[in-house]
Amino acid sequence: MDWAERAAELRQWSRGGVRAPHKPLLLLYALGRFQEDTDGELAYSAVEEDLKRLLAEYGPPRPTTPAYPFHHLVGDGVWEVRSDRGDGSPGTGVRELRATHAAGRLVPELRVALRREPSLLGRMARVLLDANFPPSLHGELCEAVGLELEPAEATRLTAVRRQRDRRMRELVLTAYEHRCAFCGYDGRIGSVPVGLEAAHVRWWAFDGPDDVDNGLCLCALHHKLFDKGVLGVGDQHRILVSQRFVGHGGAARAQVTELSGRPLLGPQPGTAPVAAPHRAWHLTQVFQGDPRPAAAAW
Image (cartoon, rainbow, N blue to C red; front, side):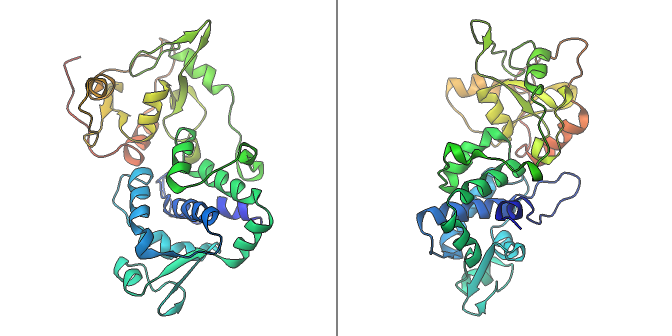
């Protein structure tokens, strides 16, 4: 099997669209570290905090531990672990991994393949990103794990991906009359919208359809905050703001906290609003914590 295809087929706990990106995040992190040191091992005690931060920022809203992927990724044939007890992971617990000085790295065959074919690393990274995260997070996630990808490495594996509907962006922007559904931004250069994007409510990577009722027209800022779980859409299609968001400046209040409780702007009459199942998926799998009280009566 091609290594990129193997990355696309990591075994993840999944039921009803639940996000479980633990293994992809660890593998992305390992690929980033491989770029720095092709032979180095990752001692669990040394990388635990890095993995915690990745899981907290890009993982599911529910609590999780970096010990889980460190142990379980071994079963996918791309990762190996050694400890004071010898080859193999000593267990799934944080204490076991620390106490036995467990360390992991990419399996020898994969390291050889990555040295022989440098473009493989980029292909694997792109597959992992596409299969588990929305495009709005790809760039910052690469920075977070230390990955440097060349533009030529954006090649996608059509054999393991369904095709996107390229018409979705225009259909969603038209439905929302080319303005951000959260703040009303409607900037243009001439007749061309600038800074407006079609956001998937249920992520495309998790079977979110390229349909208008799974889309929102959002400015670049609010698209990013929506995909990071700072913003959500609740009952009566009102905007939700996470209590975990902290911003004291006037811009943070105006652009984020004061949105709480406002109704979405759009879509225009005759167009389907965001479907309830897609809103529910986003609230359980992406939105961070509990929503703030409405900022004002609307």
